Every structure is written in structure tokens, then in C-alpha cells.
Image 1 (cartoon, helix red, strand yellow):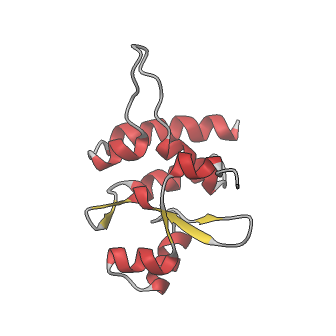
Image 2 (cartoon, helix red, strand yellow):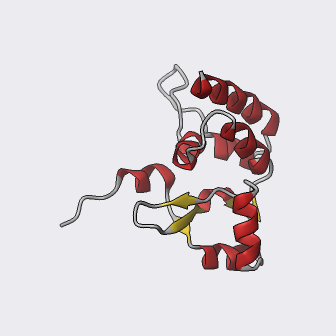
Length: 127
């Protein structure tokens, strides 16, 4: 029996480049270009596999504001796994519940609030 990778629980299901291209109606070169420009989040596994978290796709499109958020996060660290964790982590709301994750708030088109938090986190990562 193999231990489950804890990243799988944090990040959730992922696409391959080919499956993300199909989901978005793009070509694989489009996905590669989008990843290079930080329009989509791309993760490189230890064994050289490229993965694309499914959470960044909503109703057949890349979540609005994601590219802006990834650009901001990249100013604090180049670690795309760190960005993925930040996007997917729910924080305690102080009342025993949880705040929606950043990616959930982006789906709700709360881009400005998420960008503000991204700037704060990027600054703290770079300090």
C-alpha cells in the first residue's frame, strides 16, 4: 500500500497538458504559452510530469483574475507549488469555521480582495 501524497489533498485533481487543452478548447501549445506567461498554473512533479490543477478551470474557462494573481505571487517566490497551496488553502475565520480559499473567491469574482492578499503574501515571502 502506498502512502497518499499530501499535495494531492491540498491541490486536488489535476489535468495533463492534453486534458487541460481539451477542457478549455485550446491547443497544447496554447496551454504551454499560457503556463509560461502565468495565465495558468503549471506544476512540475519530482518525476518530470507537468500538471495543471483543475481548480483553476471554472465553467470551461480559466478562473477570472488568476493570471493577475499568479503574476503577483511570482514576485514573492518562484515556487508554483507554493502558489497552488496558497490558492487552495482555507483559513480559520476565527469563529470555528473556514474562510473560502483564494481560488474559491476568484470564482466568485472577488479579484480585488484576492489580489490584495496576494500582494501581502508575496511581500512576506520575499522578505
